[in-house]
Amino acid sequence: MGQLIDFKTRLVIKQAETSLLDYQARILGMDKLELLEEMVRFQEERAQSGELTYQLMIEGQYLFKRLEENAETPELRTLTKQYRRHLEQEILAYKQKEISQ
Image 1 (tube, rainbow, N blue to C red):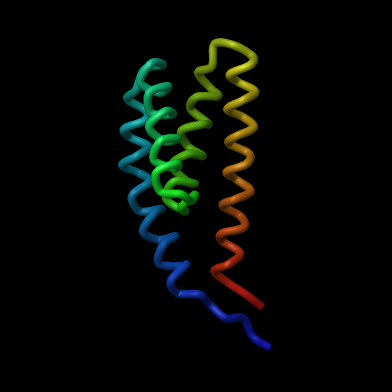
Image 2 (tube, rainbow, N blue to C red):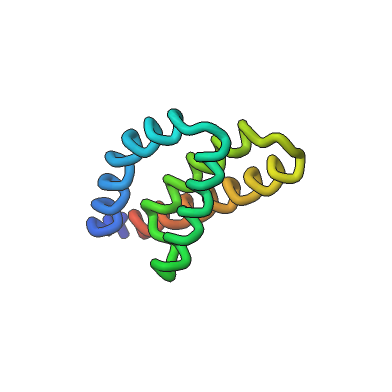
């Protein structure tokens, strides 16, 4: 059998990736304190939505990469790296939904 494409999932991915450039630009302009505040905002938004949306996954992946790069302690670096890797796995799983065999 051929592959089936989930167009709803494809649309969500396309919209999120399109808006990612704006988010990346905003994050690049943040200092360390602002990055930590953004991390708190991210966690609050995730808790409020009740689920980890694709938009949150890709924003979080970028945010936690920046936090990892700017971490002043090994503990924060490890924590942010682990969460970023978790988000990478969630992104891969979500994208697999786009094409089912």
